[in-house]
Amino acid sequence: MELYKQQKIKIYNSLSNQKEDFVSLNEGYIGMYVCGPTVYSNVHLGNVRTFMSFDLVYRYFKHLGYKIRYVRNITDAGHLENDADVGEDRIAKKARLEEIEPMEVVQRYTVDFHNVLRKFNLLPPNIEPTATGHIIEQIEIIKSIIDNGLAYEVNGSVYFDVLKYNEKEHYGILSGRNIEDAIHNTRVLDGQSEKRNPQDFALWKKAQPEHIMRWPSPWSDGFPGWHLECTAMSTKYLGEQFDIHGGGMDLKFPHHECEIAQAQAHNNVTPVKYWMHGNMLILNGKKMAKSTGNYILPEEIITGNNSILSKPFPATVARFFMLQAHYRSILDFSNDALVASEKGYYRLMNAVNLLDNIQESKSSSIDISNWIQSCYDAMNDDFNSPILIANLFEGVKTINLLVEKKETLSSDDLKTFKATFNTFIFDVLGLENVTSTDSSEKLSNVVELLIDMRNEARINKDWALSDQIRDQLADAGVQLKDGKDGTTFSI
Ligand code: AMP
Ligand code: ZN
Image (cartoon, rainbow, N blue to C red; front, side, top):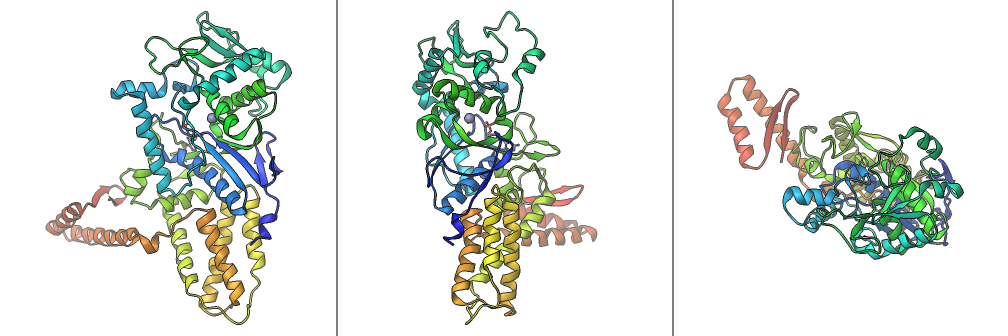
């Protein structure tokens, strides 16, 4: 496989809005920063999708042999409600509502985040820094931006001077927003605001007496602005310039735009070479989001305890479902889509199991090099996992022909074929083979059989039997739910 690993990769760069040849800043090394979660509630499946997109990127670069340093932060301070510069800190608010310490909120949801990502087989990043662990670094950056004349202090708070910055640089370079239009369209600030212009954003906020998450600084006891932590942590661990910065599409503006401005104002260099943005997971036609209540929790997929799915699905099936879409495409979550993905997933795993027992022949009747190349081509074209998966299904066809002895592979070719097929499925896509280790599919089939028997009992008005099936399943930990589309179950 070594030769295949040397080829050019194209990455869609949100800065230029086009695919570009990937050339790392230091040959053989890659620095990648991805904005992590704000740990004030359980992550929903949409969050998982974004982190999974970058898990795929990380896994592929590792497979290619790069020394990649992957930094993904934990936001545990500074992220206010509505992503705004005023309002309550999300974590402090949760702590107030639950009557616990903010750091208890942080701990609870950081643990949940890690548990969920482990279940979906995401590799941990190399460094996972927290905002509260980098207050000093953030203060140093603010000082430097003030020294460079691009931030100002008012009443103990410090704001980034967007208009001044925009005289020399381009605020809007990433999001395509035009600052002049924005100025034109916003009303003049009401007398309450301390900002010189509405576009300015907070680097440091003086804490009101009731704000408990606070740190000393040269300007006031307060807390850093949300955008600053990522500039501080990415610079600290990856340098003033690094290769890849990722996050969900919804973070492009203002968060990433502000990150660029801060880093440029601080170091006088463009911080990131390739900006990558993952697209959204959609539910019921709308973005999956905690704030609107339009979401499904990862755990609810695994248990089946939800109103969207007809049955439980293993986490790896949900992973496969998400990787069947390209990371830059919108993806719609639905029961039908998951059922279809599950079928495909088991076809793939079945082929993995068959491949284990295929015997080598003296010679090969097929040339496998084109197929291998097509797998690499898919991933080299901006990490196109759906095309890779289509190619793996071509591999499944070959496996079936080998089983039927209609085609043959020599010892060397069989080894290469197996290694490629398994590497892409397990190392690159990060799928897990649950057929051999997990009996959940068999259990599902048995429960479906009992549901059918119960339906028949109900048609025959044998209520005693139908109740017995329902009650004894409940005793065994399987809940049946009767709905307008039939009976579903959760475990
Ligand atoms: P947050 O904790 O809200 O900052 O979100 C963590 C990450 O999840 C960010 O990169 C968001 O862009 C991403 N995200 C939020 N909602 C969705 C969604 N519905 N689909 C995909 N990614 C999302
Ligand atoms: Zn960030």
